[in-house]
Image (tube, rainbow, N blue to C red; front, side, top):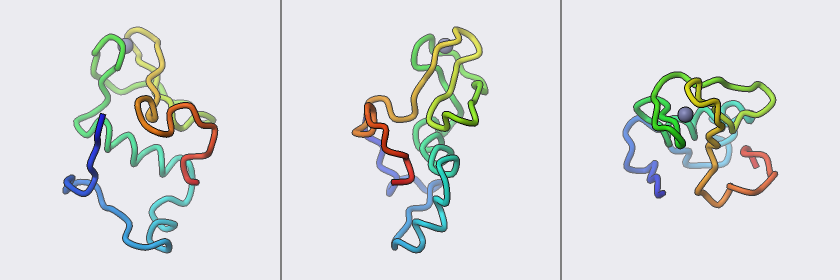
Length: 90
Ligand SMILES: [Zn+2]
């Protein structure tokens, strides 16, 4: 999956490190941005295709759990960040 945020009018893109640090002060801010990039029209389950607001976990900002099938969709699945434990903000 390729998501080009530069072509997305609804997503600001940081132009400098200070700007980056303002936009992404913590993991939750990173996760919210990735979520908008991935599911701009709202969450859709990767597994069963159901739309709707997913469950979220405060201690796992990269994970959305489908309320329909109870499976987890990772914000980083299919990206270079998929199997890393490096924080999103890094
Ligand atoms: Zn589902």
